[in-house]
Image 1 (cartoon, helix red, strand yellow):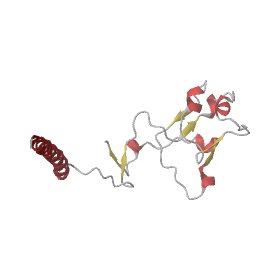
Image 2: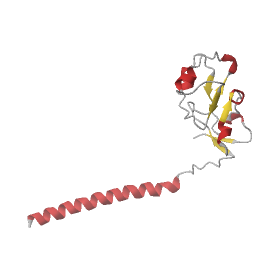
Image 3: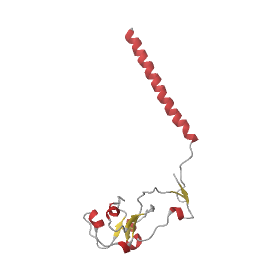
Image 4: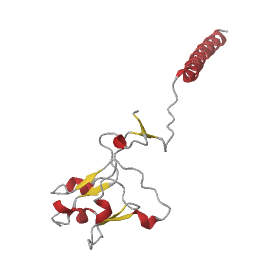
Length: 145
């Protein structure tokens, strides 16, 4: 008889605990209609990248001393002409970190999509092109998250 009472007591405690967790889940669910939507209408609104965002690499040809440190970081590659294949690049930033003359830098440009993967191979001319900042683009409304 006593064991039956103890089992009912434990069962009651488990029911109360389960009801508490269901209540917590319900409060989270009921709070969602009160929040503002975070959807960004992409072509017309763009999120501002963070300060340390790793976007497309910018190359300043005048500062480069052809030390080939950036080539040694990526093993099994030979530096014939300076070009970067962004289809293979993982945007780790090692080539920028080890460059002694700071001729490489990361930009905030992240729109690199293409239908042809060969268009992602940037030569030194296209790497030297300074991208338009999202802040200065008048056709786009910037959204800060």
